[in-house]
Amino acid sequence: MPSKSLPPFRLAWTIWGLGAAFYIFGFFQRVAPAVMTNELVADFNLTGTELGHLSAFYFYSYVAMQIPTGLLADNWGPRRLLTAGALVAGLGSFCFAFADGMFWACTGRLLIGGSVAVAFVAMMKLSSHWMALRHFSLASGAALFLGILGAVFAGTPLRLLITAFGWRPVMLAASVFPFVIAGIIWVIVRDDPGERGFSSYAAEVNAEKPRTGVFNGLRQVFTYRNTWLLSFAPGALAGSVLTFAGLWGVPFLTSNYQVSPPKAAAICSAMLLAWAVGGPACGNLSDRYGRRKPIYMACCALIAAAWALVIFLPKLPLIFLIYLLMLIGFAAGGIIIGFAYVKESVPSHLAGTAAGVCNMGVMVGPMILQPAVGWVLDSRWLGATQSGTRIYDLATYRSGFSLILAWAVMALVCLVLTRETYCRQRS
Image 1 (spheres, rainbow, N blue to C red):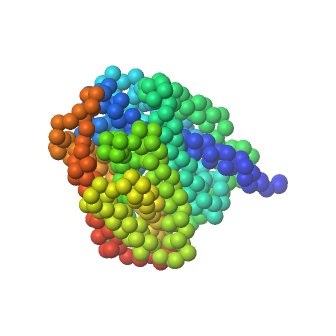
Image 2 (tube, rainbow, N blue to C red):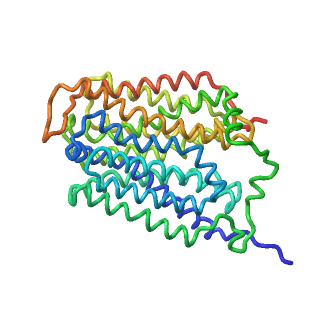
């Protein structure tokens, strides 16, 4: 009986790409509130703290779903998981677009965050069956790059659409996408190439891999010091970008630099693009150098230094501010190093659990910083308003952004205390 052939390259990447399409939608929704802050504040009569919480509801459910997602991927399979996730994301998007108050708006964001949280894990599960091991890093890097492109579309293009049609019609139209992608995923995606008559790469991936229960795995990974330290550090990198470009950047730029909302959105998009470029660049540099710790520390130090300049120098020229924001975005790409670093810090059979813990740490940063910055803005607000929206002065924003700087400094201290892996897996 002839042996089955491996799946065609194009088919494998098509199936992965459908999962990536849902992942892109998740990134789009992650930063979309940044370009509609004035509309959200006016429609729902929000303070800065409330606006921060509204945006952060996405991250609350996203973080909470990290561990269950691994279990669901193993028990349901990525096809069912992606389909269900996309349907719930569509429902959450509808809920947000039609919300008549804070409760339903937060409910929508909660549903969106929890549902799109399954995308990355499901994509990697598909990769383990449909692709060779040597393509894993390419698939991971491509996922981050495409996701950030989705966030870029939630910048200037989304702002222009909102200006033309209003935020509710635009977000309602966007909510159609996950329903469409759910149908396509259900029809085309299969969990394993064997369902289409091809042989699977799963045996290659799972060869000699010890089985570890979820809670036992968590207990084991936290016995390694690097796990604790490396789960705190990425929140500074992701928080630096997503707190600014994902929420507070547009109102900061429009109120203190008198730029139009589309231009402010473009500046935030430039920061996100720098993040997309910085990920592969930092990861490649770390691989070539054969070290994780110094490159990761350098990225964190650059972020801390750039935020210190933004906060402590007198009002910066806009062009200099843009350069600093792009530097922050590029250095935040060092977050890619963190995943490799933490996976190499534990035995190979615990690498997936360690990566999941690290991914939770990534989202804890913006989850805490977005509403925390809003709280500082409200506590130092001088009473100025424009069309019913609170206006915060430069000194107030600096106080809020100092929280980002503080996290970056603490993250740098954590990285100093980590043990170098020299790009080798712990035995």
